[in-house]
Image (tube, rainbow, N blue to C red):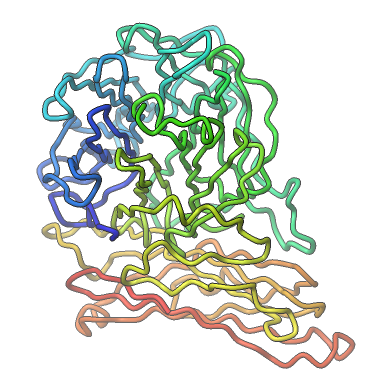
Length: 534
């Protein structure tokens, strides 16, 4: 049964983000994430937090602060991993100084440092050190963020620990690189950077798409949360090579390393893993090297991936299984079917799978266990799986083939992308006047018609979304409709933000298609913050 581990406005922070998961050799489960905008500190600061489970995720200890960010500093996503040889738990992350400072006289430069936490008692206590005040090498000029961690269980570099970094290279190029340690985390080397894959319509470009896949920023009046750069996710293959995956809309990309993660070969597209360009996760199905008891010859080439499987929107947390070292990903299970981001995946000591992810615009962090047996059936193209757990507050997913074009000439999706707090008053899980809800959506023509498509709804920036004429297979992307919570919304105790997308034939020559409309509604409880979607 899924469990909510952190809720916006509860537990001392205005927002929680960037989840990470790891399983210790003892079998205990660690869930790490960032808490931002704490009541005790400046609005722009943040802390690194942890919850532990000793029963495979059935129950969790209270939230503990592992790293308290000084004024003006905030942690990024943690690379959480365990050292099978020593039992030590490591948590690597990038700390940002003066990140998005609201002080007009504060320095504009953002210094990013490689910080490392370690625990020798299953996460009960932690030690901290700064590995490098500032990263510098011949090819990497700066850190942008950290990501997943793993260990190598076989091959010439067995015992090596890896942490993924989003980096900047020569000329300011964004990329990803592996940081690695061969002495149980005492010293670290950052390998050669791999240029980030281009975001936009590539091998999976949809015919008739009306615009590029890359989302423009929200309205200038809305200060969006700083996006977490995708550092990639790595796993050790059966022959000791390292497979790296990086998200970049409309699909994920992969590269291989023959030298233990120091350098990677060329990127190749993974068309079975559509992706909006957000962070994902990759791990071995057998849990090696931390969980040796699950290893078996039959699953030695099996990998698990978790990502948001949509080419445009941050939605659809899907668990995927590969049985050929990442060459193909035919087995899938939908964990959550609406707005989400940043899923992390691990294999649990009892053989199940654990997934931790943000959902509903970052309103909460949710942990969901999954039975690996549900992944054994191949996922037909054009079909949608059942969710692992229906949960509450979200839409019921489709459970069969997608509707045929003659019955549904228009497909319309909308998700809550972010909740931007007004930061006025005490910390609460609900909403107050001035809070901003940022959405993202997409309309797609499924049939052979040429349609004029129009989005409408109670949003502040309706003028940003004029009608668009789309051909067969064409898409309109809506980044980002904004609704500011009003005093009337608050007084109603529960309010609804509804979006309607209508489509009409462009001219008589397009056929006899009637005007159709699709509506998505978000119902928000002012006090509890709960969100119902329909």
